[in-house]
Image (cartoon, rainbow, N blue to C red; front, side, top):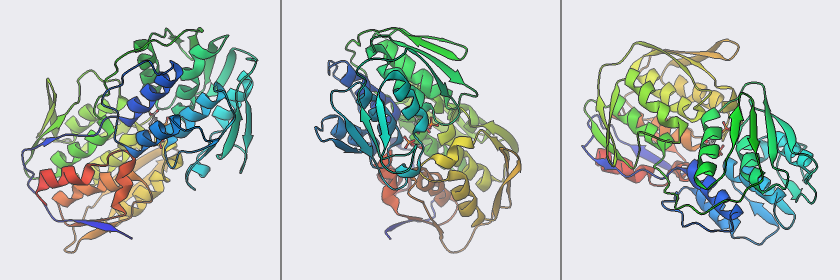
Amino acid sequence: METIHLKHSPQLKAVEIPLPASKSESNRALIINALSGNLSALQNLSEARDTQTMIRLLASSEETLDVLDAGTTMRFLTALSAVGETPRILTGTARMQQRPIKILGDALKSLGAKVKYLGEEGFPPLKVKPIVDQKTNSIKMQGDVSSQFISAVLMIAPCLPQGLNLELKGKIGSRPYIQMTLDMMRLFGIHSNWTNQTIEIKPQQYNDYPYVVESDWSGASYWYSFVALADDAKIKLKGLRQKSLQGDIAIVHMMNQLGVMSTFEADGVVLQKIPHSNEVNFDFSDCPDLAQTIAVVCAAKKIQCTMTGLESLVIKETNRVKALKKELKKFKVKLKEVAPEVFELRSKFELSDTPIEIETYDDHRMAMAFAPLCTLQGIIIKDPSVVNKSYPGFWKDIELATGQ
Ligand SMILES: O=C(O)C1=C[C@@H](OP(=O)(O)O)[C@@H](O)[C@H](O)C1
Ligand SMILES: C=C(OP(=O)(O)O)C(=O)O
């Protein structure tokens, strides 16, 4: 297997990091644009594989669409197929075939689509036959498995003849991603009403809008780690805005406690080192993609960290809790579930004279979360091309910052 060897680089150069554009915003803008009849000139779409796959599949006339390992692409195209012209089969990697989709399938069935699972019930691959007669406008969806099911249904809602009255059941995970969906829909002319657990959308037409995708805050988080861990650092991240639609802007406040100050400028944010807390407590329900970033930084800085809201991590690109536990152990760090869904990170972080090899488990965030440890010692990352899913320029940007 291919590897990348990051040499020990305690000092970072004062550089500007270009960052990729957000794949979450890009994939929503692309679906919305497809639903409007491609009226808009979208700007700064992401080079992430998940977005490039979305672009390719939206242009495809094949019956079978292979989303590879892209969750949003799978869920959003499944919903889009329910308001399309012809039946579609949606499939993906072996891991994608283990990621659930039943809640979305059931919602589309209630609306009148025909959904057939071609492998295991409730998982891809699945065949979707479009809605002919909308059966109801009133549906319920569980909110604590993946917000992507909810975003997917919301984006097609204005195109349903009777609109949609969606009741969310139970706890709502990844809530800012649902808000991002509604906020982006608003920019393209769609009114919605979200009160408590109910979201209402009347039948409406999407307008055109020259949407400019912001840089990716999830990708930015790894640069916060670099600054938190380096001896000396001042880095500017380009294309990030203080008022963002992305919930992962939460990294600003989290990292403020972990030793990184953010100063917003017109075209990005400047990161500098500040003193850090010794004990922190974070809930990742709203920002699950930041969990690995934070766990690794707390481990390396020996900051005691209590982590909650990790429920959705087990059904992402890999079981991220299991993967984190295994790789952190290589540095004598324990991540332990001390009560149901409460994890404590206790660190006796130990450096090693020889480079430590990190397994990435087909998960871009495992590679990117552990890479900043090269500020402390040599690190070997296995299967480095995993980063292409969200941040193809990651290793090039590291070269810029470390000179290696
Ligand atoms: O809607 C989105 O763009 C996303 C929602 C989140 O997934 P879940 O809703 O499954 O937590 C997040 O983890 C993923 O990277 C992107
Ligand atoms: C979970 C992620 O993506 P997705 O669910 O869209 O595959 C991610 O990018 O961390």
